[in-house]
Length: 154
Image (cartoon, rainbow, N blue to C red; front, side, top):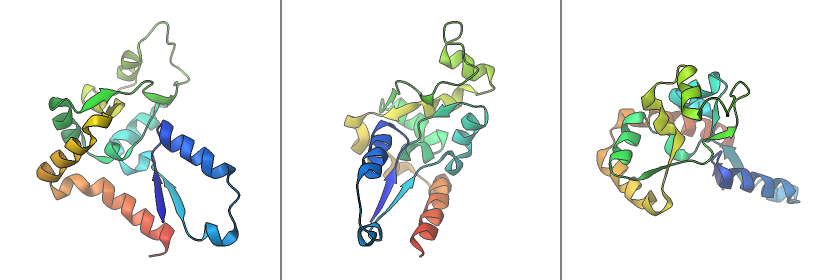
């Protein structure tokens, strides 16, 4: 079994719960947990390089074009908060988060990564991706799968 953990609240909670469990050696051989990282999408990695640690979920692996389509269909909503931890240089009382990001060189299109797919729209999002995605938009998933295969020894 492989657990793919997002870096959102649910993923962080799941990781904490697993850390508190006392698994036997045999049980530990039956599953692997793998945490999504910014390296799987260079657009998301750009935030991290600028000290802006945003939440990463499976939808974050899609390119901006897919997220733009989802926004047009009203499938997205803003994360609250939009980051894992506030950037060290950000003075919240003087600058909004969006203004801070822009000041760090983050372009408007990349703000789609600050959104998440609404829970009630997850299935609609999946269907939209199924009918509109092309193989070049899945490159980030190929990187993830390669790493998963290495972890699993496949």
